[in-house]
Length: 387
Image 1: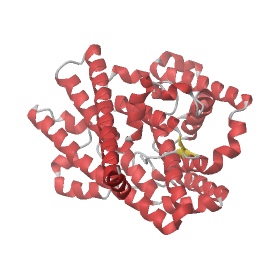
Image 2: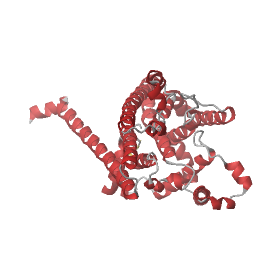
Image 3: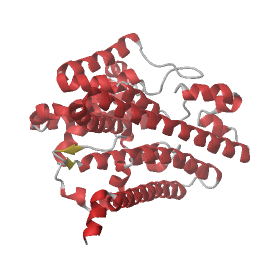
């Protein structure tokens, strides 16, 4: 959710592409009982779009703020990171308020309390004063609103990590791995309200964010030859095939007999909350093949047919928030109007189209503001006077 991602002054368009794709997939996955969500990657392996989003967020954050820390020092860079953290926090609270109003209005207008139960807002409707305070503390999070608090937590502790990464990258990465291991051994997590813990354990998910930052700040250059090797590619393909075969047994119970009992006992549960190692490996297998198939100079990155998804990737925070609203709106249409396959496809396509439209409008406004600043700059004024 940080804008940027340049290599030698040139923007890496792959970041926009896959971040935008992750936003689309998250939107589709957030619509309950949506047939279109069967095309998302969570149905073909252990990981899903969340891993893509978190890794790219760490990658782009390291590019932007790592450069700032080199050029402007720790204090200025830290101030920029904390300002961005505050911006995301404000966006989260704004999203929370509008989201609660949306769900409460629909639940009351259609006299269907199941909306409040499905979206996890029953506590808010019962005790809005207490629940609002817990929301401000990032303890109360309705359904589909767990990603932003994770990102806020990761950004808040990012300054010292970037500082150490620029000086001792191996030590910084080792520290991140140690925190991940501690979260597994000691069950570290952040408490949630009214019970339980965060859906995305920040002590575990920080590892993926940190790995993205490590790759951005020189780590990929160190392992690039290994990642592109034939042996690693073959291993990645084999792992993806095996994981797909396992996932198939989740939807065809009769096939579970083909999974050895010992393997199943060792493997399950494949925990998303605590970022199971099998999910990490699945994401990295996908990343290895992606690097081989989609190089930085891949011609389709400039093609018009990929621009809609890349536009969304360039405005990730705003489009993510919009996607949360649209997912509930799509759910409402499916439940109250028509739950047929055609309607599910229609609301999914309409939601993505609206996301692209809003991203395009934001880019247009940004271009206008850029031209206005250029017109009003001293250099522009001098040019007009001399003409």
